[in-house]
Image (cartoon, rainbow, N blue to C red):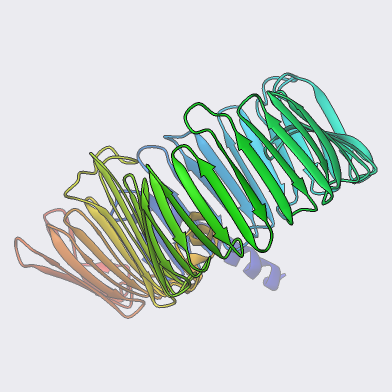
Length: 472
């Protein structure tokens, strides 16, 4: 009886304790439990280090995470939500009336309008089962490789097959292709196309009155004739010895194709000697590659360069009011710089968004009036939102964040914390000590063992606390 009574009393005390914790506006027992407002002004509580987190912004954005098992995110500006369970095992998202989910990336369901019983939808188990309804409310069903029809798959509007690869029919707009023993025999018509292929023995292709192409024993002999008004001419390749392209605005010679090619034209000239190791071109696109050691390419407003491909690369795109630069040396270094209001109206050209990641040490991001430094950063390449939301806090043992005039440093999920604002500075080491200083008056407030002995301030009133409950 006494044991039961003790258990009931203990349960009531614990219930009351946790109720008080959640009811209070500001609680700091980090890393076990903390509740309050972060430096960005978001209402947030966290528990058990990186395991539990809830956050809500004034604009209505939400985050709820029980890592690594479950996370929920809502973007109010996009009216978009995402749910993820043991990412990427089970993922679901929705926007307005659209909803979809994925299991192990292969089994998926996508309803494009949950309010319309006849809307477009997909239920796919790749590559075995395909069921759905297209945008015109036409249903389809396919069991691969037996038989069926799939609509709006990759680049195809429609795919029909029976005992794949024995019989396959595809359609893209008005272009229809019928294949027998795909990809050996096929016939294509529609959209100005007339093609016949018996691979690799013979192939014929005609596009309206613009071009005619043929091959015999591909790739040994291929031929093309062009009747385009802007650039008529012809071309052929006798593989692996020689090739020639002669157009009104371009002339090209190939030796041991595709290794050596020399082309000259009014808009573009290029040299492959040999491809892909040495590539040089001028004109619409300027390129110089010594692959895989180093290379650069410029076209219109974009610039690309690499070194030790595919490890190191740099990409730059510029416009009158936008500039984006990306630099990478996989997997160690990844950095970006974005200027202009392309994706954020308040961003100006002189306040770019910058990111820097040195794997596995740290990641850093700064955008207009806020920044964040995180250490460690164990996922290589860039910081993906899904990875950061579901797994990132486990290895993020230290963060430095800033927003306008506020600063915050956290070590071991708040075990050690330093905060600074225009009005005061605070430091805490749980559960030993916390101390704060008001910048204007210079007054201190402090607490030892979370209130065993403390000097506090509530408004203009100052007091001492002893043994947690005694105040004077």
